[in-house]
Image (tube, helix red, strand yellow):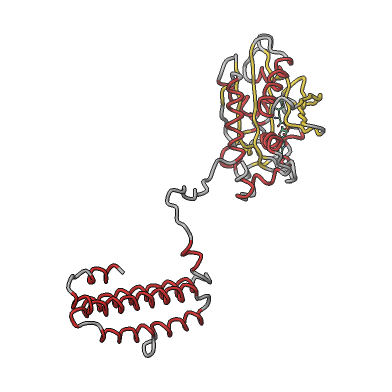
Length: 360
Ligand code: FA5
């Protein structure tokens, strides 16, 4: 009771006696305030709070009102101090009532927990969840990094292509089934407006042609991007997916170089316990051609096609097949990412479900 202690310190007997009355009044008020705050804070529903309100601050018979009457017994000279004290207590009690009303409106049943909660300002705040690059974009960056270390630079090509780059220069003649409109996304209005058929590229091999048309050998590039095919979506197929194309042209390049590069790439991306194997295959633009499979444990999964660049392709871009040879490969980026991260369904990448995307 610091406020009364000051008054008790007056030093002459008379004042001490009158001041004691003030001290008693203040003590009474403090006790009342403490009781009221406890009652408001402990109210667990609106009825309990209303009962406490009537008991302590009710206009007619509230205990605060009754205590106010005790002012009469305080010495005249001390009434001002008593009035100030009374107002302080009223403010405190009303604030407690207000806080309890808001707490119940917010659906919290007791204020007790809050009042005992320790606020530690030294604890770090909650970090907001930040977005990040899509897993396929992350994979593309990593593949560029690995192939960059093997000496391959990145080339780009358009997603809307003409038939020369998507087929003809790749040794795919006009009667080849791969050119069937049902196997490709042709752009309906292109022939009329552009004077030639255009389509969404079905493979990144188009970029091989674009690079060789512009660059004399030697060539050592990769190209990563979207390709489009009217494939039905299932666990391993999607109508839009990504490929990484690789092309190396130089003197005396052999199939052994192709196998070494793909093996080095696979172990860099997936680790040394990955196995890869090559199966004989056919692509019009490579001879011989292979499909490359990889395995981790028991299952083999095809991750791309590859082979030695066909002499017809070298001639189509003005290279001399007697002078230079080369290899090319085209890998499915989603398939690589799935293998690395244990994703069992390619469709997950394109649902935009943050619960999936946040795992990467
Ligand atoms: C090609 O696209 C050839 N251009 C690859 C190539 C390049 C061969 C250079 C030789 C030289 P293919 O159609 O097999 O080949 O596709 C290559 C890879 O793309 C497949 O192994 C697979 O990993 C992936 N892929 C193919 N279709 C889909 C699809 N619908 N959804 C997801 N990935 C696919």
